[in-house]
Length: 204
Image (cartoon, rainbow, N blue to C red; front, side, top):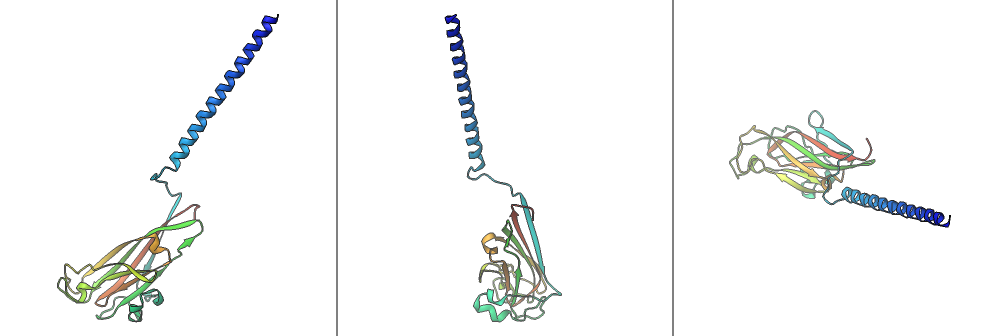
């Protein structure tokens, strides 16, 4: 009888030890899987899809008048953009306009933008010369020109030529909630379009 009891005790003890080892092994494996999964989720360089992407487009052009926020332009051009008009017909007049947009939305962040400005040459000019050839289209952000293009500098241009210049904008340039356009004086501005792109945690 004692031998039977001893045997049963040994069997129970062995079963308990085996179950405990299995639980420990299972727990270790699970913890390892969780660590691997967590590491994969935050691995540097791993792309994460935006749950709710959004974009918004703002257009500017006739019949509405240009509306530059003069104080946001560089000081040396502020006086020259007063009275800006779309499709001006005579040279020697600078142009300014400002796009206004919400830089912050609840649970949303602007990540990039695309600006398109359609212009027309008011003078025929040879490459690398004056007049419409060397006139530039500037993007104004945070009180300064952050980028510009001179589309006809190297090619020259014939009066009446129409061209659309395109700029890709980053989050820092868009952070102030305004983007300005400054165009030099021998070019007419026909229209402009700004598209801002962002990501929202929740559906806007």
